[in-house]
Amino acid sequence: MIYLFSQTLFWLVLAFLLGVFFGWLLKSFCCSPCSSSSSESPQAAEEIETKPAAPEKTLPSDDMRPTALASSEGEADDLKRISGVGPVIEKTLNGLGIFHFSQIAAFTRDNIAWVDNAIDFPGRIEREDWVGQCALLAEGKATDFAERYDRSKNK
Image (cartoon, rainbow, N blue to C red; front, side, top):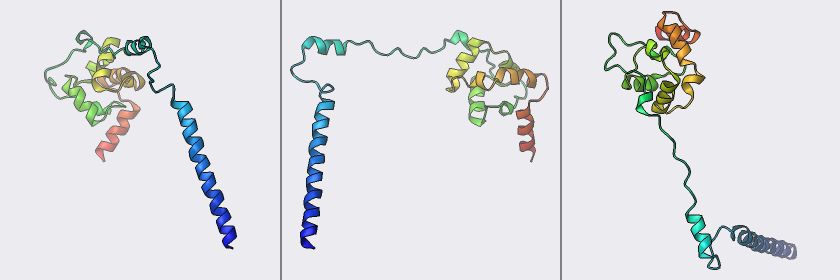
């Protein structure tokens, strides 16, 4: 029994040591191009350092900003009736001077790009069709989402 135990232990230790050795060997071969060595030429180091940086994200200019209101000019519309607008986005839109469905219904492509950047949800306005929804809501019509929202609010 002791003989069997010692043989098993021997083979386990041998397998462990071989695994460590081959792991070290693979690591040295795989990572050698990544590490810099003194044999590299100074020109190669300069080429690495002078690579152009990734282009920065261009922000929409203020001339793309939609017409903002200083205050809601009357009672503000409940922008949460728009699919894709929750309390946080509504507060952000109000902070940008957007209080009414008619304002969103009048958005141009430039306005959409500017607001997308301001609310930090790229593509959401077009994906959720805020302009189309607001055109209906501004006319006093309801969307399916607005009706569901109104029902849940009145419960």
